[in-house]
Amino acid sequence: MVQPMEGHTVQRFDGELSNLHLMILEMGGLVLDQVNAALRALREKDIAAAHLVIRREPRIDAMEVNLDNEVVTVIARRCPVARDLRITTAISKAVTDLERVADEAARIAHLTISIYDSESSDPSSHLLRDTINMGKLSVVMLTDALDVFDTLNAEKAEMMIKNHGELDAEFQSSLRRLTTFLLEDARNIGHTVNIVLILKALERIGDHARNIAEYVIYLIKGEDVRHQQLENDDPASGSTDSDQ
Amino acid sequence: MQTIELSGDVMTEAENTQEFGAEKAGGTATVSRDVRQTVGDVTVNMPRMRCKQINVYYGDKQAIKDINLDIGRNEVVAMIGPSGCGKSTFLRCLNRMNDTIDGCRVTGEIMMDGEDINSNSIDVVPLRAQVGIVFQKPNPFPKSIYENIAFGPRIHGLAKDKAELDEIVETSLKRAGLWEEVKDRLDQPGTGLSGGQQQRLCIARTIAVNPEVILMDEPCSALDPIATAKIEELIDELRQEYSIAIVTHSMQQAARVSQRTAYFHLGDLIEVGETKQIFTNPRHQLTEDYITGRFG
Image 1 (cartoon, each protein chain N blue to C red):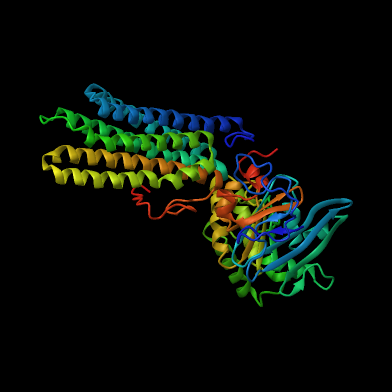
Image 2 (cartoon, rainbow over the protein chains, first blue to last red):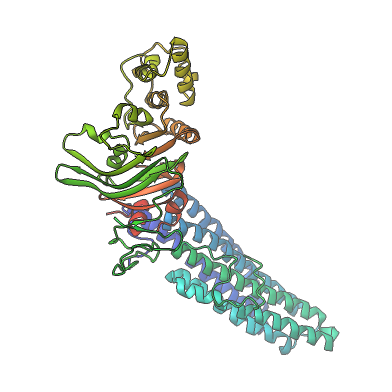
């Protein structure tokens, strides 16, 4: 199969599109590292690691600006149409989602510092359990999103969107468990609020991953599947779709 | 030539043996390069002209094959495709300009006002007033600006007296966006104008004889970007009153000025669709390869 970014008579255009693709995958890799590092810092009470996540965030912001500049340059120089236009559009939109995922990772790092720097005792493993489960799910979703953007696999992207409800369902279950926990012992309220904010950040990471999968479907098929329920997508899954 | 309707998810007369998407590049366009039936809806409601099964031969060589295409009212149809694909040949069928070429033979039916323009009973002189044409290279007559415009109405008997003729000249030049630039020098030669002004003079000359359809064969290829922009603006205004069919090598121009786009390839009409759809999500792999610069 001919690669979607190749085959132009002007071969430099191939290079420019491939470069955009590589840049966003590189950015995606760093963003995934940030999420993993933030979750590890939370799990292992590693304040230094949380500070590192926060310090690295400007690097992601710079990549966003750089990628946006490159996209604008390609549009200005090449006037892309059809598939090329969809490639540049999808990359441009995915950049924004990835930057926001990095923001969520930094938010988790900040909350981690807040949780462990506070004068009260550390949160119980009970309280942290849901962040571990949801963390795993959101990391899988982000990894899959980057994979479908790398391989431009629309079928896998559709599968991802169908399975997106799992993370939303886990978020809802976690909220119910934390509510119960709070009812049993109101002294946990400080930690619980922080944990809820972390869970919300993880849920949003899942939403951004879903968005990226939608851009891949648009890129490959030219179909805009945002704000749609895909076939067999469970409408009762409790998806908030807050970032779509 | 068969037609595949994709707009309504209905594929009529498609050969079951054809394997769609077999050689698609990157999994985007849905119809593979090997399929030569027209993709998309070639018809429009209340067409100004309806072309059916048009074939053109230059001697033994067939230039275009079984082309079906409607020219709609108050719309700009852009015809794009690589050199030699037959787009200009098809355009010239629409006012029988191919009659002037020795050895050229046209078959098929081009219906306008209930008549086939290819029938022997049609007089080509009024036909070419009704369906005017603007060529690639501006070709003003070697006469004054005034006479360039007045010539057509005079021979077609469209003005009773000098006052009426003056009014036609002024109105035509105004519609072509040239009046303000030339109103004080109407007696000067048309050939003394700039390239862009000459092309607008030719458009004014076409308008002067009350056409219903205006054909344009690469009207901006000899013009600079500013003159091109003025012609494109003019095309958009003229669309309110006329049907326009334009052949262009500039895909950006097709995207800018037209409502529908037709892609020709080696004498076949490959795809027709709304311009927005053609330039964002073409259905045929050949269309996509051409407009994205992957052709060949």
